[in-house]
Length: 173
Image (cartoon, rainbow, N blue to C red; front, side, top):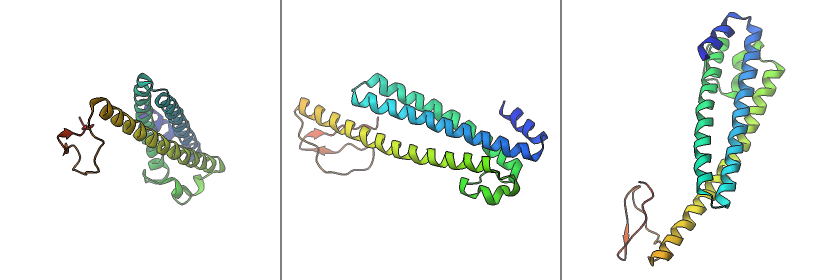
């Protein structure tokens, strides 16, 4: 399907190529908004201690990432046709596209950038929340097992560190 879309875009006048790019950016923005919704559901599941909900959100995020990868490949194909270079950063669209850079395409680019910035903040919040939940789980396991609190010992990733006869939990299984 992707090849057919690129071929169809290639046979249309150049002006349609700019419109196709604007639509492609709009699809990417929509996918980022979908990912933001997944992250919100993930935060809610963590707050409710809903392990199944967290698990579902991870799989939902993976589906969105795969679709987003396809959407970005499609955008690169269109950019290749329009400018000769597929890996054009959003900030360089004006220079790379020249007369193809329409107001609609500029708005689509700006909306995509804004959505990506909002998503970056949500990703950071989720990362901190998940780290705190893992930390809390580690403390609970230590308390239930009678193990001493975690020592401030650093080791290479994946290596178990022994402190006073107890092994630290290795989460990299």
